[in-house]
Image (cartoon, rainbow, N blue to C red; front, side, top):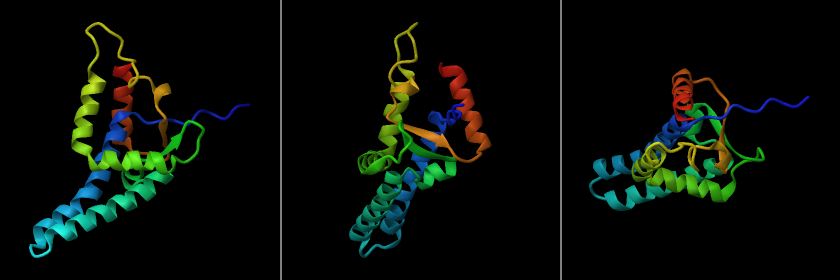
Length: 152
Protein backbone atom coordinates (compact mmCIF):
# COMPACT_ATOMS: atom_id res chain seq x y z
CA UNK A 1 0.00 0.00 0.00
CA UNK A 2 1.42 3.37 -1.01
CA UNK A 3 1.82 6.22 1.43
CA UNK A 4 -0.63 9.07 0.89
CA UNK A 5 0.66 12.04 -1.09
CA UNK A 6 1.61 14.93 1.26
CA UNK A 7 -0.70 17.91 1.14
CA UNK A 8 0.97 20.80 -0.64
CA UNK A 9 0.29 24.50 -0.17
CA UNK A 10 -0.82 27.02 -2.75
CA UNK A 11 0.16 30.61 -3.55
CA UNK A 12 -1.52 32.42 -0.62
CA UNK A 13 0.54 30.52 1.97
CA UNK A 14 3.71 30.89 -0.09
CA UNK A 15 3.16 34.64 -0.46
CA UNK A 16 2.52 34.98 3.28
CA UNK A 17 5.79 33.15 3.98
CA UNK A 18 7.63 35.40 1.52
CA UNK A 19 6.25 38.52 3.19
CA UNK A 20 7.26 37.33 6.66
CA UNK A 21 10.74 36.44 5.41
CA UNK A 22 11.09 39.86 3.80
CA UNK A 23 10.02 41.54 7.03
CA UNK A 24 12.65 39.53 8.90
CA UNK A 25 15.24 40.74 6.39
CA UNK A 26 14.25 44.40 6.11
CA UNK A 27 12.80 45.37 9.52
CA UNK A 28 16.08 45.35 11.51
CA UNK A 29 17.85 47.29 8.76
CA UNK A 30 15.12 49.92 8.56
CA UNK A 31 14.96 50.24 12.36
CA UNK A 32 18.74 50.64 12.56
CA UNK A 33 18.63 53.23 9.80
CA UNK A 34 15.96 55.21 11.67
CA UNK A 35 17.16 54.90 15.27
CA UNK A 36 20.97 55.01 14.85
CA UNK A 37 21.68 58.28 13.07
CA UNK A 38 25.45 58.23 13.66
CA UNK A 39 26.19 54.85 12.05
CA UNK A 40 23.00 54.20 10.15
CA UNK A 41 24.37 52.93 6.82
CA UNK A 42 27.04 50.47 8.08
CA UNK A 43 24.82 49.09 10.85
CA UNK A 44 21.79 48.81 8.54
CA UNK A 45 23.82 47.02 5.87
CA UNK A 46 25.36 44.73 8.48
CA UNK A 47 21.97 43.81 9.91
CA UNK A 48 20.56 43.27 6.42
CA UNK A 49 23.45 40.97 5.46
CA UNK A 50 23.25 39.09 8.76
CA UNK A 51 19.51 38.53 8.43
CA UNK A 52 19.91 37.45 4.79
CA UNK A 53 22.65 34.99 5.73
CA UNK A 54 20.45 33.56 8.48
CA UNK A 55 17.50 33.38 6.11
CA UNK A 56 19.69 31.60 3.54
CA UNK A 57 20.79 29.04 6.13
CA UNK A 58 17.16 28.36 7.08
CA UNK A 59 15.88 28.37 3.48
CA UNK A 60 18.47 25.80 2.45
CA UNK A 61 16.89 23.49 5.05
CA UNK A 62 13.37 24.38 3.90
CA UNK A 63 12.12 25.90 7.16
CA UNK A 64 12.26 29.68 7.19
CA UNK A 65 10.40 31.72 9.79
CA UNK A 66 7.71 32.56 7.22
CA UNK A 67 7.28 28.93 6.23
CA UNK A 68 7.07 27.92 9.88
CA UNK A 69 4.39 30.55 10.57
CA UNK A 70 2.48 29.51 7.46
CA UNK A 71 2.62 25.88 8.60
CA UNK A 72 4.68 24.24 5.86
CA UNK A 73 8.20 23.16 5.00
CA UNK A 74 9.76 23.46 1.56
CA UNK A 75 10.81 20.18 -0.03
CA UNK A 76 12.12 19.16 -3.44
CA UNK A 77 10.18 16.83 -5.69
CA UNK A 78 12.14 13.90 -4.28
CA UNK A 79 11.23 14.89 -0.71
CA UNK A 80 14.62 16.25 0.32
CA UNK A 81 15.70 19.63 1.64
CA UNK A 82 16.01 22.43 -0.95
CA UNK A 83 19.77 22.88 -0.59
CA UNK A 84 22.07 25.88 -0.87
CA UNK A 85 21.15 26.95 -4.42
CA UNK A 86 17.40 27.00 -3.84
CA UNK A 87 18.06 28.63 -0.48
CA UNK A 88 19.92 31.42 -2.25
CA UNK A 89 17.05 31.90 -4.71
CA UNK A 90 14.50 32.01 -1.87
CA UNK A 91 16.66 34.50 0.05
CA UNK A 92 16.97 36.75 -2.99
CA UNK A 93 13.19 36.59 -3.38
CA UNK A 94 12.84 37.74 0.22
CA UNK A 95 15.31 40.55 -0.46
CA UNK A 96 13.43 41.66 -3.57
CA UNK A 97 10.01 40.83 -2.15
CA UNK A 98 7.88 43.75 -3.26
CA UNK A 99 8.91 43.68 -6.94
CA UNK A 100 8.87 39.88 -6.97
CA UNK A 101 5.37 39.68 -5.47
CA UNK A 102 4.07 42.20 -8.00
CA UNK A 103 5.65 40.32 -10.89
CA UNK A 104 4.38 37.03 -9.50
CA UNK A 105 0.81 38.30 -9.23
CA UNK A 106 0.96 39.72 -12.74
CA UNK A 107 2.36 36.45 -14.12
CA UNK A 108 -0.19 34.31 -12.30
CA UNK A 109 -3.15 36.43 -13.31
CA UNK A 110 -2.09 37.09 -16.90
CA UNK A 111 -3.17 34.63 -19.52
CA UNK A 112 -4.88 35.15 -22.87
CA UNK A 113 -8.60 35.83 -22.80
CA UNK A 114 -10.46 32.55 -22.98
CA UNK A 115 -7.20 30.67 -22.46
CA UNK A 116 -6.22 28.02 -19.96
CA UNK A 117 -4.91 29.26 -16.60
CA UNK A 118 -2.95 26.08 -15.97
CA UNK A 119 0.24 27.28 -17.66
CA UNK A 120 3.70 26.94 -16.13
CA UNK A 121 2.71 28.83 -12.96
CA UNK A 122 -0.70 27.21 -12.66
CA UNK A 123 0.50 23.61 -12.87
CA UNK A 124 2.09 22.35 -9.61
CA UNK A 125 3.92 19.64 -11.56
CA UNK A 126 6.21 22.35 -12.98
CA UNK A 127 7.42 23.65 -9.60
CA UNK A 128 10.91 22.55 -8.51
CA UNK A 129 10.02 23.07 -4.82
CA UNK A 130 6.82 22.17 -3.03
CA UNK A 131 5.46 23.40 0.27
CA UNK A 132 4.58 20.35 2.34
CA UNK A 133 1.96 21.17 4.98
CA UNK A 134 3.34 20.57 8.50
CA UNK A 135 0.92 22.52 10.69
CA UNK A 136 -2.67 23.72 10.78
CA UNK A 137 -3.24 27.37 9.87
CA UNK A 138 -6.96 27.69 9.26
CA UNK A 139 -6.94 31.10 7.59
CA UNK A 140 -4.13 30.18 5.21
CA UNK A 141 -5.60 26.75 4.50
CA UNK A 142 -8.90 28.44 3.64
CA UNK A 143 -7.07 30.87 1.34
CA UNK A 144 -5.27 27.93 -0.28
CA UNK A 145 -8.56 26.08 -0.78
CA UNK A 146 -10.14 29.19 -2.31
CA UNK A 147 -7.15 29.60 -4.63
CA UNK A 148 -7.26 25.95 -5.65
CA UNK A 149 -10.99 26.07 -6.33
CA UNK A 150 -10.82 29.12 -8.59
CA UNK A 151 -7.48 28.61 -10.33
CA UNK A 152 -7.81 25.13 -11.81
